[in-house]
Amino acid sequence: MRVSYHSGANFPKFGRRMVPISTGTLKPDMYGASKDGWFSRPTSHLISHLVFSEMEAGRAKWAQLCVQISEHELYFWTPSELDHVCAVFAENPFPTARTLVRRDGADSALNMHWLSRLPKAMKAEKFRQKFLKFVASNPEELRLFREFYSTA
Image (cartoon, rainbow, N blue to C red; front, top):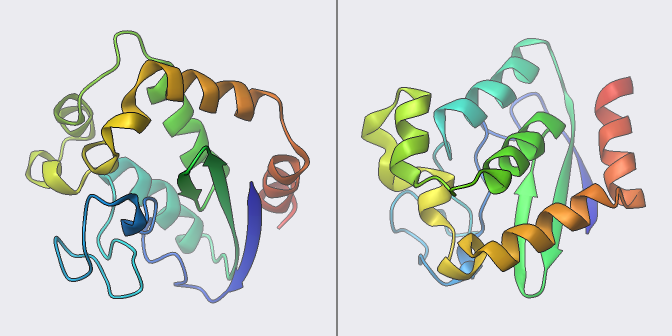
């Protein structure tokens, strides 16, 4: 787990960049992916809204949290984004991307939804439980990430 810090009012570009292409599911220039290996479109309507609300509030400094479990990485721009993913990972039965897109009210974005882009191994119950347990352990980097957004 690591935290990186960034400046610029538009740095996270409306919630983009949650899942890097290095997961092997996409190649640069496919499905809105950029050459640096990140998605160039919102990863979900809800996450876009969460990050956009921070931008509208005038946020000019950002922290990005990277959580690595085994060889898989997930990236988060806000604590609310992390909380949303944790809530989805905790759901039983585990929802499909189509279910989440319907909840968001953006049916046209199914193929770009963050859940549809996750590799199969990251959707497995074992991975999700490992991720949730790790986040619940509240490591130092996570405390710093949450503190950054509570004070900035």
